[in-house]
Amino acid sequence: MAPDQSLKRVGLLGYGRLVGDLLFKRLGGVPTNLPPPGARRRSPDLVVEVAHPQIIHDFGAQILSHADLLVGSPSALADRDTERRLLEASRRSGRSVFVARGALWGSEDITRLDASGGLQSLCITMATHPDGFRLEGPLSKAPREGPRTVLYEGPVRGLCPFAPRNSNTMAAAALAASSLGFDGVVGVLVSDLSLVDRHVIDVELRGPPGPSGQSFCVRTRRENPAEPGAVTGSATLTTFWGSLLACSRRSTPKPGVQLC
Image (tube, rainbow, N blue to C red; front, side, top):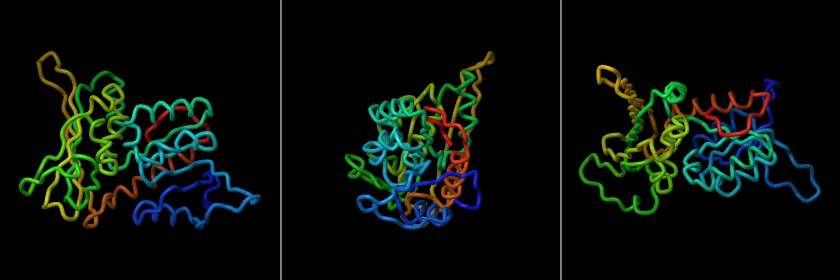
């Protein structure tokens, strides 16, 4: 990242054909394997995970003993033990756990409303063509009934283990709305045969009833162009690059989990 000296040395975990490839090219990276014994090792200031939540489960805490961490698979934090180990490692090392907001629109507004006590419910619906899903466990065998099928509706924590690559936006929302968290934010996963070239994410949040009995309500819809069968939409790539730049320019580490 030589063009801007305020940026840090970045290590990239994951080289998928979309996110990993884009980041690698923009960073001006050089592919390397593990150095031979005795060779000088590179020491990144920031490690970016764009592979799979299992990387965070297995190595997230270890990474934090050496560098800040940008989590590209926030569904990993739905696992309570993983979240605990990351927080403990962050406090010990004084390093930051950044979480990419990805396709979540309005994350700052959700956080501000939540902090003010004005958030009562939050529901995230993600719909795409069935070829865009990478499902595991019982969801991988869920029947498709008609052109549009709701595969899951319930707490985000219950979805993440079975849709680790398709629930990251919902996981980011659970982190943005900390008072609701993974157990209070509702995720809805929809298989839609008509969505061959895009992902559609609907966000609905409500506040508590006011004096008139009416509740504050916001609904947003994000239609993200995507190649057929792709897990990640094209607009999310630009968002992720912005997240990387934002967290890499922070000069003072702040322990804990932060959306970026």
